[in-house]
Amino acid sequence: MKSPSRRAVLGASAAAVAAALAACSRSSTSDGTGTTPPAASGALQWWDHFEPLERALQGIFETWADGGGGEVERTVYNPNDMGQALQLALGSEQMPDVFSNLTGIPTPALVARELIAPVTLDSDAQAATSGALFEGVHTFDGAVYSVPLFSHQQHSSLAWFDAEALERAGGDPEATTHTWDDFRRLLAAIGDGGETAGWVWNIAFDGRLQEQLVDLAQGAGQALAFNTASVTPADITDPATGEYVFHADGFLQALEFLQSLVTDGAMLPASTSLDAREARARWAAGEAAVFFDGPWNSGVLSGQFADFLPRVGVTNMPTPDGAGYSARGPSTGQFWQSSTSGHREGVDALFSLLTTPEFARSLAANMDQPPADLSVVADADVDASYTRAIEIFSEWCRLAPSPLVRNPGVGAVIAEMEEIRPTLGEIVQGVIGGDVADPVSALKDYSDALAAERDRAIETVVAAGTEVSLEDWVFTDYELGTDYAAEQY
Image (cartoon, rainbow, N blue to C red):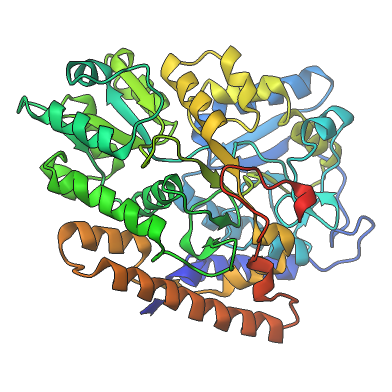
């Protein structure tokens, strides 16, 4: 069945944001952004919801100030409060100069409504971002609106393990990959002692389950196209045909592998009610030896389970042959300049500083999502487990083709689509819990429902004037394990 929750992400608050944006955005202009920028006055206002970026952002603010720039006042919001704060700011015509986009409005719509302004990067920043900026994601009509902070070379299915438990079971803590068969044997050997389960999972976190199924399906050889680096099923298609293929062999094999870990008895029984935070805590407490998670696991352990961190090792996700690639679409920008900003030159300078190696190293020091430039991690002040995770991503993660990059009109289609329920993650929950007896049919129904909803969305946006077709989702020249470069579009 369909649920309005995809659009409901916007909610009444975002609808009010859109109305306020539309009301504020159509005045005469001298720079093509819809508003005449006011003269700079007071501190540059910067709003975002990235609390872990405090040290990295403070570094660029100080660099800008030391170079003759002014003061930056940064306000950090809880993600749940960010949209409401922007709504209120718009209603009172007090938008910040820079904000992270939690309005619920897709970036192409913000651009089309002339609500955000482009930035001018300095020559060093232009060189640093060469080949990394994509039309429809970071640039629009050739103008730069944002720069990626984080790398697309990442996933949330690294196998993090207690190195001592792994070694006792006959595993090699220095290995970077495992086959599915070897992984199952290791977990069985770990569980033979009776005191520690082989693996703990976060079954209560359906969003993470769908991410991990997508990752493991790619590890099994399933090539996929992604609109951006995020893992949202409506954005993920077969590059050869443009179709939704969550019932294809790679997904079925990945689901069978996950089921096998349960039927083997390797999974900590409490996993059925655990989210990622709770599962990590159980793992760090020694209740299980292995936990699937992303690169941010090192940072969380450093802050919450520092005594356990020295015992931790990490490998790539297990794959059928131990040599599976994954891919994601381009990493999006995180910060945007309001078209009402009176600090255009300051924002230009700050966005340019976001592309520097110094900022990337400071970002890496958080041991969270990896910086856009992975090469700086080797010299950053990070734990060895984080360095190893990034080395794994450098070798095994690639750039997938993006329908959105080929045609920004794809973004209008995705925004129009309603979410299909049960979701991919909920289907995985149902399969593992025994509520879904026929996974093949459930996944085929899900693929078909997504396809039908996309057809409806395409018809709707085309009728409204957007030029887009199913051909925009087809990339017959893509192979998993390769990077889909900008010149291939």
